[in-house]
Image 1 (tube, helix red, strand yellow):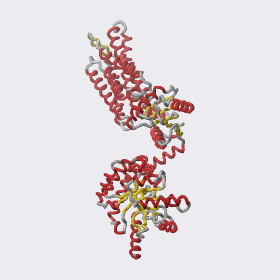
Image 2 (cartoon, helix red, strand yellow):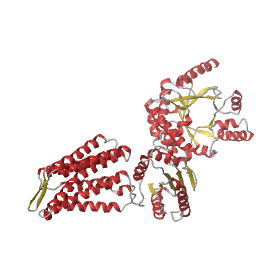
Image 3 (cartoon, rainbow, N blue to C red):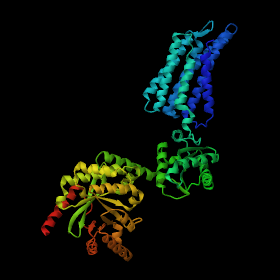
Image 4 (tube, rainbow, N blue to C red):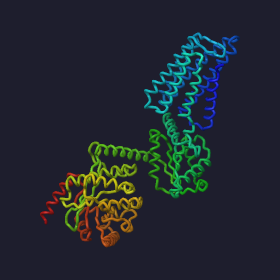
Length: 634
């Protein structure tokens, strides 16, 4: 009875629906639209099969009933065309007012078309096992369904940048296949392909886009990161308020065991997690879980339950050494789901060094801090692209030669209006987002170019000091990149002195030492910067192959106001000189301070007493003027 294709279509759709029902749904707008599409397609194929059965079994005795069934089937074909269009619109518009207007207009058109189909005559043909319908009602159905198909194709192409590109491709494939099947059936009424082709198209959408497994973490059964982004986007589009809790673990174990242990902890967490009403749980990484509480007024009690669960289940959850929590009480703190993700990642970065049972509640001030840093990050990227990064130079005076023999290169950035941006506000941002590596290369390249272009050695400069950040010191390709820059400008490496900090030597000592070895073999010298801050001790000087040690400003200034600091500095100076190393005292601001440092036999003096950091042109003029003075005195 030409019913086999319809039976196959029904079986496919039923299997998809049963598979879909096995998984928890986030009730995303596209998920709801797809479920309605599946139901509509199932109804269409069922009515197709029912109409064939009715023509074969009931036509002689119940012709009116058969006509009604056949026309209902024709209406379901148009309905599927409408539902396919609504499904694609839902991806583009979500559930916003514009989407609701589109759906309402589409339904109104569909109802009007159903009235037309109901009023038009229909012809029923039965020749042995071959049955089909024809006539004005069928032609109208082709026209109405075709109009939805064409509209969907045009809409998908025009809005391809606003929706999911892959969804658009799948929709176009389905519409094309369905259109080809309808054209084939129109030309050969004996081939009833429309319903089956529609079912195949829905199956393609299912496996390419709407398979629930795509939003589920296979290890734990929790929702995954893609699900979080889609769900949070839905909540923000609907203006639904919610709260968010993130949990991340630091197991305190060797790197080789990290992945297996983190997976074990995450699996144990997922299995033992108490069921909380109106709560969605998402696995964001092997060491991180996010929880969305759909009812903010009840969120705090749920947060306390989760904290207790993690604390008392530490041993069961793999004996983790640290669990850190970040809680956003109100989704209205940020503007959209993307800013929400950035906020929680920012909070994790800020809390990365905190101990066990750490809890961070984000508020408006914290969000504003994040936004300022984000704005600074964008400003930095633009400045790097538009060559608004400059290098200033602060002269360094030799107490032995009685002249300026070096300078420290200091990075500066200008905004679009030409104003200088305080270094402290963008350097930390650059270190946090990895931009410190290209920024450091820009600075180093400008230093090499300036030194060779102006032949600074003619003014008595022995070298330029260039700072290395903690991130740069841990970068394995640092030596290769810097050697390449020096070769590009053909600068003698003895004119370069790279400054490292104590924290840098702790953070990535092995990589740093290898970089230092390669650069020193090439001819570069090194200084230990900011001695006297942080966890300073003389072991760093022993461990690091440096030529110069720099007393930071605080240590230099403390010498003049604290007897204990004076004693410590004297002792440190004697030991450093005993190791045949040179000393630079930073932050010297007055003549009395300079004379005191000179009397202490400090090798080099740096500070505002001589000069503030100067841009290239002013620094060059400074060197020229002081070189004349030196020649005159000589």
